Length: 317
Image (cartoon, rainbow, N blue to C red; front, side, top):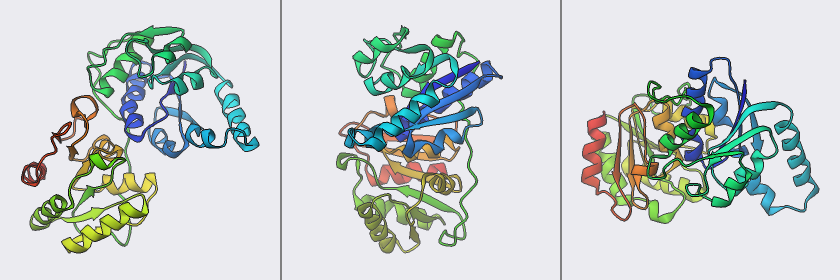
Protein backbone atom coordinates (compact mmCIF):
# COMPACT_ATOMS: atom_id res chain seq x y z
CA UNK A 1 0.00 0.00 0.00
CA UNK A 2 1.70 3.16 -1.21
CA UNK A 3 0.46 6.62 -0.23
CA UNK A 4 1.67 9.98 -1.50
CA UNK A 5 1.35 13.01 0.78
CA UNK A 6 1.41 16.43 -0.87
CA UNK A 7 2.28 19.21 1.55
CA UNK A 8 4.91 21.49 0.11
CA UNK A 9 5.12 24.66 2.23
CA UNK A 10 5.58 26.45 4.53
CA UNK A 11 7.79 25.16 7.37
CA UNK A 12 4.96 25.26 9.91
CA UNK A 13 2.51 23.66 7.48
CA UNK A 14 4.91 20.80 6.75
CA UNK A 15 5.35 20.19 10.48
CA UNK A 16 1.58 20.25 10.96
CA UNK A 17 1.33 17.41 8.44
CA UNK A 18 3.79 15.08 10.19
CA UNK A 19 1.07 13.53 12.42
CA UNK A 20 -0.67 12.32 9.24
CA UNK A 21 2.32 10.07 8.51
CA UNK A 22 2.23 8.81 12.11
CA UNK A 23 -1.50 8.05 11.90
CA UNK A 24 -1.18 6.17 8.62
CA UNK A 25 1.70 4.07 9.92
CA UNK A 26 -0.27 3.14 13.06
CA UNK A 27 -3.36 2.12 11.09
CA UNK A 28 -1.51 0.54 8.16
CA UNK A 29 1.85 -0.71 9.51
CA UNK A 30 2.99 -1.91 6.08
CA UNK A 31 2.12 1.31 4.25
CA UNK A 32 4.87 2.97 2.22
CA UNK A 33 4.59 6.75 2.42
CA UNK A 34 6.13 9.21 -0.03
CA UNK A 35 5.97 13.00 0.39
CA UNK A 36 6.05 15.93 -2.06
CA UNK A 37 7.65 18.97 -0.42
CA UNK A 38 9.54 22.13 -1.34
CA UNK A 39 13.28 21.51 -1.57
CA UNK A 40 14.07 23.87 1.34
CA UNK A 41 12.04 21.71 3.72
CA UNK A 42 12.88 18.27 2.32
CA UNK A 43 14.91 17.28 5.38
CA UNK A 44 11.85 17.46 7.65
CA UNK A 45 9.83 14.54 6.21
CA UNK A 46 13.08 12.56 6.07
CA UNK A 47 13.20 12.73 9.87
CA UNK A 48 9.99 10.68 10.05
CA UNK A 49 10.65 6.92 10.02
CA UNK A 50 7.37 6.21 8.20
CA UNK A 51 8.40 8.25 5.13
CA UNK A 52 10.02 6.07 2.49
CA UNK A 53 10.87 8.64 -0.15
CA UNK A 54 10.81 12.44 -0.41
CA UNK A 55 9.98 14.04 -3.77
CA UNK A 56 11.41 17.58 -3.67
CA UNK A 57 9.95 20.34 -5.80
CA UNK A 58 11.00 23.96 -6.25
CA UNK A 59 7.82 25.77 -7.28
CA UNK A 60 8.97 29.05 -5.76
CA UNK A 61 12.25 28.91 -7.69
CA UNK A 62 10.67 27.55 -10.88
CA UNK A 63 8.26 30.49 -11.07
CA UNK A 64 11.20 32.90 -11.26
CA UNK A 65 12.76 31.12 -14.24
CA UNK A 66 9.84 29.41 -15.95
CA UNK A 67 11.38 29.60 -19.43
CA UNK A 68 14.80 28.28 -18.43
CA UNK A 69 15.70 24.80 -19.76
CA UNK A 70 17.03 23.83 -16.31
CA UNK A 71 13.62 24.54 -14.81
CA UNK A 72 11.87 22.21 -17.22
CA UNK A 73 14.48 19.50 -16.66
CA UNK A 74 13.72 19.66 -12.94
CA UNK A 75 9.97 19.60 -13.57
CA UNK A 76 10.47 16.57 -15.82
CA UNK A 77 12.45 14.82 -13.10
CA UNK A 78 9.63 15.42 -10.62
CA UNK A 79 7.08 14.03 -13.08
CA UNK A 80 9.14 10.87 -13.54
CA UNK A 81 9.50 10.38 -9.78
CA UNK A 82 5.82 11.05 -9.10
CA UNK A 83 4.63 8.64 -11.76
CA UNK A 84 7.14 5.87 -11.04
CA UNK A 85 4.77 4.07 -8.65
CA UNK A 86 1.02 3.59 -8.46
CA UNK A 87 -0.41 5.02 -5.24
CA UNK A 88 -3.45 3.73 -3.42
CA UNK A 89 -4.04 7.36 -2.43
CA UNK A 90 -2.59 10.74 -3.38
CA UNK A 91 -3.49 13.00 -0.47
CA UNK A 92 -3.20 16.77 -0.88
CA UNK A 93 -3.57 18.42 2.52
CA UNK A 94 -2.35 21.79 1.20
CA UNK A 95 -5.52 22.76 -0.64
CA UNK A 96 -3.79 25.12 -3.06
CA UNK A 97 -3.87 25.17 -6.85
CA UNK A 98 -0.10 24.50 -7.01
CA UNK A 99 -0.33 21.46 -4.72
CA UNK A 100 -3.34 20.13 -6.60
CA UNK A 101 -1.46 20.43 -9.91
CA UNK A 102 1.52 18.65 -8.40
CA UNK A 103 -0.79 15.83 -7.28
CA UNK A 104 -2.00 15.30 -10.86
CA UNK A 105 1.46 14.10 -11.87
CA UNK A 106 1.15 11.03 -9.65
CA UNK A 107 -0.70 7.85 -10.59
CA UNK A 108 -3.51 7.04 -8.19
CA UNK A 109 -6.78 8.36 -6.81
CA UNK A 110 -6.47 11.94 -5.62
CA UNK A 111 -8.06 13.21 -2.41
CA UNK A 112 -8.33 16.74 -1.04
CA UNK A 113 -10.48 19.42 0.54
CA UNK A 114 -13.83 20.37 -0.96
CA UNK A 115 -14.00 23.75 -2.71
CA UNK A 116 -15.97 25.31 0.14
CA UNK A 117 -13.20 24.64 2.66
CA UNK A 118 -10.03 24.58 0.53
CA UNK A 119 -7.62 27.51 0.81
CA UNK A 120 -7.98 27.92 -2.95
CA UNK A 121 -11.35 26.54 -4.12
CA UNK A 122 -10.10 25.87 -7.66
CA UNK A 123 -7.83 23.15 -6.27
CA UNK A 124 -10.85 20.90 -5.64
CA UNK A 125 -11.40 20.50 -9.39
CA UNK A 126 -8.28 18.34 -9.60
CA UNK A 127 -9.25 15.77 -6.96
CA UNK A 128 -11.15 12.55 -7.55
CA UNK A 129 -12.82 12.80 -4.15
CA UNK A 130 -13.27 15.81 -1.87
CA UNK A 131 -14.12 16.18 1.80
CA UNK A 132 -15.69 19.16 3.59
CA UNK A 133 -13.42 19.25 6.63
CA UNK A 134 -14.50 22.30 8.72
CA UNK A 135 -12.08 25.23 8.58
CA UNK A 136 -12.69 26.42 12.16
CA UNK A 137 -10.25 23.83 13.54
CA UNK A 138 -6.53 23.71 14.13
CA UNK A 139 -4.50 22.93 11.00
CA UNK A 140 -3.12 19.72 12.55
CA UNK A 141 -6.64 18.50 13.29
CA UNK A 142 -7.82 19.29 9.75
CA UNK A 143 -4.90 17.45 8.16
CA UNK A 144 -5.51 14.39 10.29
CA UNK A 145 -9.27 14.44 9.64
CA UNK A 146 -8.78 14.69 5.89
CA UNK A 147 -6.41 11.72 5.87
CA UNK A 148 -8.75 9.67 8.05
CA UNK A 149 -11.72 10.43 5.80
CA UNK A 150 -9.80 9.64 2.62
CA UNK A 151 -8.32 6.36 3.89
CA UNK A 152 -11.32 5.22 5.94
CA UNK A 153 -10.09 5.09 9.52
CA UNK A 154 -11.11 6.73 12.81
CA UNK A 155 -8.94 9.10 14.84
CA UNK A 156 -10.59 8.24 18.16
CA UNK A 157 -7.74 6.17 19.61
CA UNK A 158 -4.82 7.67 17.71
CA UNK A 159 -2.53 9.92 19.78
CA UNK A 160 -1.14 13.15 18.39
CA UNK A 161 2.35 12.09 17.33
CA UNK A 162 4.71 14.11 15.13
CA UNK A 163 6.96 11.08 14.87
CA UNK A 164 10.30 12.87 14.59
CA UNK A 165 13.41 13.13 16.74
CA UNK A 166 16.78 14.81 16.39
CA UNK A 167 20.02 14.40 18.36
CA UNK A 168 21.03 17.53 20.29
CA UNK A 169 23.45 19.70 18.39
CA UNK A 170 27.10 19.47 19.42
CA UNK A 171 28.88 22.73 18.63
CA UNK A 172 31.77 24.54 20.34
CA UNK A 173 29.87 27.83 20.49
CA UNK A 174 26.93 26.40 22.46
CA UNK A 175 26.65 27.21 26.17
CA UNK A 176 28.19 24.53 28.37
CA UNK A 177 25.11 24.21 30.57
CA UNK A 178 21.35 24.36 30.05
CA UNK A 179 20.16 26.90 27.53
CA UNK A 180 16.99 28.48 26.22
CA UNK A 181 16.44 29.20 22.52
CA UNK A 182 14.89 32.56 21.67
CA UNK A 183 13.37 32.65 18.18
CA UNK A 184 13.16 36.37 17.48
CA UNK A 185 12.87 36.15 13.68
CA UNK A 186 9.68 35.73 11.69
CA UNK A 187 8.46 36.27 8.13
CA UNK A 188 6.58 39.54 8.71
CA UNK A 189 7.27 42.69 10.68
CA UNK A 190 3.82 42.64 12.30
CA UNK A 191 4.65 39.26 13.87
CA UNK A 192 7.76 40.53 15.61
CA UNK A 193 8.09 41.21 19.35
CA UNK A 194 9.86 44.35 20.69
CA UNK A 195 13.57 44.06 21.42
CA UNK A 196 13.05 45.55 24.87
CA UNK A 197 10.69 42.72 25.72
CA UNK A 198 13.19 40.15 24.47
CA UNK A 199 15.81 41.70 26.75
CA UNK A 200 13.49 41.52 29.74
CA UNK A 201 12.75 37.86 28.97
CA UNK A 202 16.40 37.00 28.43
CA UNK A 203 17.42 38.61 31.71
CA UNK A 204 14.77 36.61 33.58
CA UNK A 205 16.05 33.40 31.98
CA UNK A 206 19.64 34.34 32.86
CA UNK A 207 18.58 34.90 36.45
CA UNK A 208 16.96 31.43 36.41
CA UNK A 209 20.30 29.89 35.41
CA UNK A 210 19.80 29.59 31.66
CA UNK A 211 21.97 31.05 28.95
CA UNK A 212 20.13 32.12 25.80
CA UNK A 213 20.85 31.10 22.21
CA UNK A 214 19.46 33.33 19.47
CA UNK A 215 19.47 31.95 15.90
CA UNK A 216 18.68 33.95 12.78
CA UNK A 217 18.35 33.11 9.12
CA UNK A 218 19.02 36.30 7.18
CA UNK A 219 21.83 38.77 7.77
CA UNK A 220 19.44 41.26 9.36
CA UNK A 221 18.02 38.56 11.65
CA UNK A 222 21.48 37.51 12.78
CA UNK A 223 22.39 41.16 13.31
CA UNK A 224 19.42 41.57 15.67
CA UNK A 225 20.34 38.31 17.43
CA UNK A 226 23.90 39.56 17.90
CA UNK A 227 22.67 42.89 19.25
CA UNK A 228 20.38 41.19 21.77
CA UNK A 229 23.02 38.64 22.79
CA UNK A 230 25.56 41.38 23.44
CA UNK A 231 23.08 43.30 25.60
CA UNK A 232 22.18 40.20 27.60
CA UNK A 233 25.67 38.95 28.37
CA UNK A 234 24.76 35.31 29.11
CA UNK A 235 23.73 34.68 25.51
CA UNK A 236 25.04 33.48 22.17
CA UNK A 237 24.06 34.63 18.70
CA UNK A 238 24.11 31.42 16.69
CA UNK A 239 25.87 31.28 13.31
CA UNK A 240 23.92 30.46 10.18
CA UNK A 241 22.47 26.95 10.54
CA UNK A 242 20.77 24.54 8.17
CA UNK A 243 17.43 22.98 9.05
CA UNK A 244 18.90 19.80 10.52
CA UNK A 245 21.30 21.75 12.73
CA UNK A 246 18.43 23.99 13.84
CA UNK A 247 16.48 20.87 14.78
CA UNK A 248 19.46 19.73 16.85
CA UNK A 249 19.72 23.13 18.51
CA UNK A 250 16.04 23.01 19.48
CA UNK A 251 16.25 19.38 20.59
CA UNK A 252 18.90 20.26 23.16
CA UNK A 253 17.10 23.29 24.61
CA UNK A 254 15.61 23.43 28.10
CA UNK A 255 12.86 25.67 26.73
CA UNK A 256 12.10 27.36 23.41
CA UNK A 257 10.37 30.73 23.16
CA UNK A 258 9.57 32.31 19.82
CA UNK A 259 7.30 34.45 17.73
CA UNK A 260 4.99 33.09 15.03
CA UNK A 261 7.49 31.06 13.02
CA UNK A 262 7.75 27.48 11.84
CA UNK A 263 10.62 26.79 14.21
CA UNK A 264 8.40 27.06 17.29
CA UNK A 265 6.29 24.27 15.82
CA UNK A 266 9.43 22.26 15.17
CA UNK A 267 10.47 22.68 18.81
CA UNK A 268 7.12 21.37 20.02
CA UNK A 269 7.22 18.51 17.50
CA UNK A 270 10.62 17.55 18.95
CA UNK A 271 9.12 17.40 22.43
CA UNK A 272 10.62 20.57 23.89
CA UNK A 273 8.68 22.86 26.27
CA UNK A 274 7.60 25.65 23.93
CA UNK A 275 6.13 29.13 24.30
CA UNK A 276 4.80 30.89 21.20
CA UNK A 277 4.13 34.63 21.01
CA UNK A 278 1.39 35.83 18.64
CA UNK A 279 0.58 39.36 17.54
CA UNK A 280 -0.79 39.07 14.00
CA UNK A 281 -2.53 35.68 13.78
CA UNK A 282 -4.90 33.41 15.68
CA UNK A 283 -3.16 30.60 17.60
CA UNK A 284 -6.44 28.70 17.83
CA UNK A 285 -6.04 27.76 14.16
CA UNK A 286 -2.27 27.67 13.63
CA UNK A 287 -0.70 27.90 17.09
CA UNK A 288 1.54 25.34 18.74
CA UNK A 289 -0.27 22.05 19.36
CA UNK A 290 1.50 19.12 20.99
CA UNK A 291 1.53 16.75 23.96
CA UNK A 292 4.72 18.33 25.26
CA UNK A 293 4.24 21.32 27.62
CA UNK A 294 3.43 24.39 25.53
CA UNK A 295 1.83 27.82 25.80
CA UNK A 296 0.39 30.10 23.11
CA UNK A 297 0.18 33.75 24.15
CA UNK A 298 -1.37 36.73 22.36
CA UNK A 299 -3.45 36.86 19.22
CA UNK A 300 -4.45 39.03 16.28
CA UNK A 301 -3.56 42.58 17.28
CA UNK A 302 -3.01 41.63 20.94
CA UNK A 303 0.67 40.80 21.55
CA UNK A 304 1.48 39.78 25.12
CA UNK A 305 3.63 41.99 27.34
CA UNK A 306 7.01 41.01 28.68
CA UNK A 307 5.76 40.28 32.21
CA UNK A 308 3.18 37.78 30.93
CA UNK A 309 5.71 36.00 28.75
CA UNK A 310 8.34 35.90 31.51
CA UNK A 311 5.88 34.33 33.95
CA UNK A 312 4.76 31.72 31.42
CA UNK A 313 8.35 30.91 30.39
CA UNK A 314 9.52 30.40 33.96
CA UNK A 315 6.52 28.13 34.59
CA UNK A 316 7.73 25.85 31.78
CA UNK A 317 11.14 25.31 33.36
